[in-house]
Length: 147
Image (cartoon, rainbow, N blue to C red; front, top):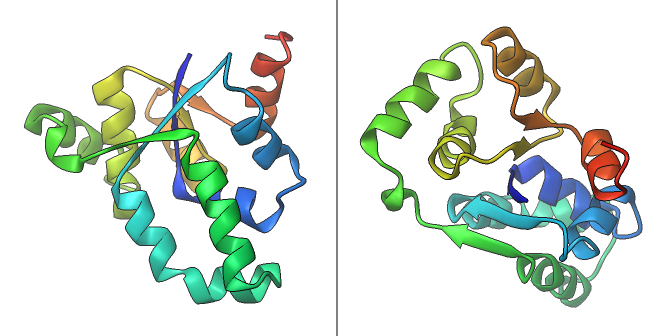
């Protein structure tokens, strides 16, 4: 199953390498194929200092963990997303955070669910009638064959 991952999922996975998000990212290869806009890499780079502070990891440790997670994700250039898809994504998130547009657009482009921990985005898309957003708990249930 193809799944688009949001930045907050990767951020959380990096902060808790033994948590359920990291577990899903690192141990679901035969169930999920993860995708993200390449923009995610820029976002995480901007928050490098915050990640180091919050995690308590050294640069070397954080780099190792990032690389372990990044190997599980196919990064897609934003330029490959069709204009029509961008317009639809922007319309869907018009009352939410504009920085979520690349993730919503990629989900639409790939016709794949979006995995996010962003409660505002989850609720906002639900209000818009979107049923292809997945929470971490739902991802666990899917992976474990409970859904």
